[in-house]
Image (cartoon, rainbow, N blue to C red; front, side):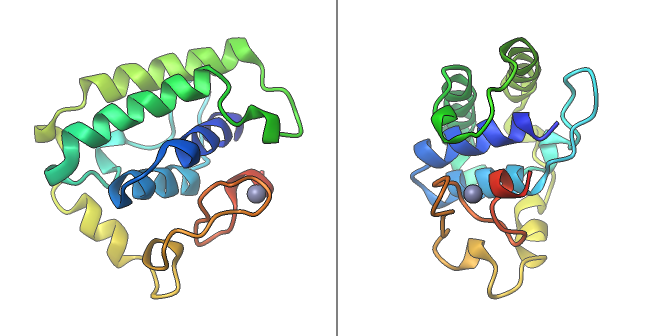
Length: 147
Ligand SMILES: [Zn+2]
């Protein structure tokens, strides 16, 4: 089930403007492990939240979810996502993000994640994008190309 991350990456890559927003989308694109029943396979408190920009970044994530629901960037996919399944995943993810508060941010989540990246990692190199999909690259390349 890479579909859920594919569409979040497409929507998020069109909407992200600040570095903290771009980091969120790169993080998501690295996590393409999704378990069944519409549950995301990672803990949202481990996302690279920055306490300084938390409320903006949370609002951004909700916008990304709405973008994905409105098929933002779907024309770049070579398949047609199942709208019913996608809507279930997006609804669950939106509820989790809505419940997230600044107190939930795991201490050092951002620094821990950044410290795992090499100097040539996209997060340290101006957030390059996939030429085909326009999505932010991760250390593994383009999440949409790879899925
Ligand atoms: Zn690509």
